[in-house]
Image 1: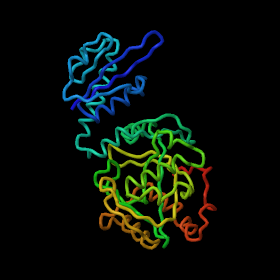
Image 2 (image 1 turned 30 degrees about the vertical axis):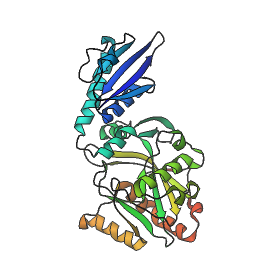
Image 3 (image 1 turned 120 degrees about the horizontal axis):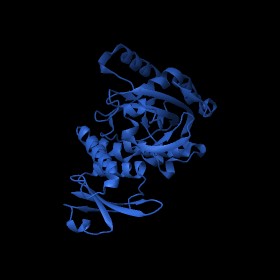
Image 4 (image 1 turned 120 degrees about the vertical axis):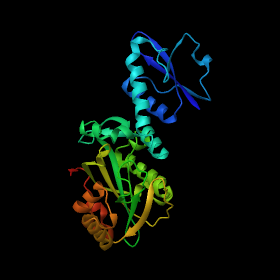
Length: 323
């Protein structure tokens, strides 16, 4: 199956249209990012699906054409774009051919919100690019994230173990849900942290199957923000400005195996034992770096507020803790 896109490139003197076709949905998604972000094409104005490219698609004199199998159709004045699209798209696809299909789709299609260290929005980029250590080390990947801490009516904290197919930190134990608000209108709303709370509600459903009506956005309490950097392996890592959201709610859940390997409620004492095992390297227990930062710096004193019903008293959304 081939996917055919039509892009328009505008300049002060002309409007040039290009037909671009690719045999891969992932390649097409990455191509869209490169074309719209790096080379300032407009958004896709049309696309079609074909079992193979039709010669008729490329017959019009009004269009210039780019094929991943050949760049001979493309004008020499834009040869750098041809090379970039071909090399970046095919290179990344081939390099990550072992990546789980679900995770690969998310890595190329989801766009994170890029911020500076004061949490001002400065742009957006694919989840793939935001988690490459080469971009993190170059200072190009700081993005918004959130970490949800969900407690039941017994004041036990719900933990999840990330699935084995996760690109970063597979099979580590972490807080209830950890992800990113995306570069979309509903998740960019800054008033009352509504955009981040909308994203948290979305991901609780995606990852743990918790219905949205069981976790109303107005019941999340934002307690603070922290900025941290952590490598996952030689290629991947995290550089996040992380919003810490607490909620006390009894919920039903159906974990998504593409996202979650296991989930369980723990008491304070259970969590202390899990941390001890992680420190001692026992039973292969590993904790995510962001979760451990919260445990070591904030969690137990905030747990007191959970039990006392005084969470809002603990909130400090002005400070960005650099950990």
